[in-house]
Image (cartoon, rainbow, N blue to C red; front, top):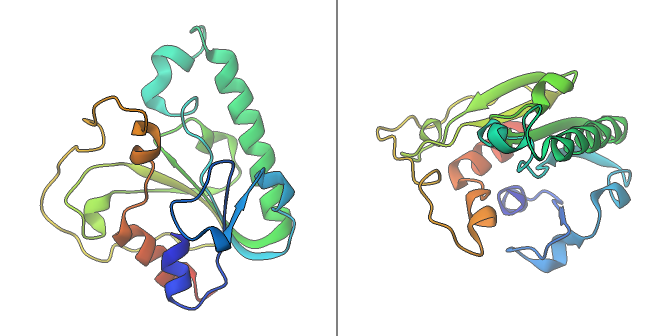
Length: 178
């Protein structure tokens, strides 16, 4: 997503505890709480979805073995959201079908890759602060469940979280002019 914004001439940066797959010159490899207040026009958050995704209810749901991790993830993500809307004019928070959206005071929108030129299924949600919902750019046939069917691997979690290029381009086009 950062590359899509930079391709349009925006001063776009990424932040993660992990190294970037993109250009390290435009990446903060550190805690997001250390950079969220630097003065941004737009912040797009991608908090870890492991404990919050509905697909993990059998492990992280109420009364399940890791429910305390879900509670902690929700608390941290709500705190991140509140800090972000204090320090940026517009904020989006991306997660799959997730419990987080009911905890945020924000409009929510769900999209699919097939709405943006990719014949795949990966329901993705956005909480929106001072942003309009994304408008589909290229509805295509095909509903492959490639992401859901990925086999176990050391990089599976990261590979599943990659943003489709058509979605990244739509976000840069539709939100980048703000």
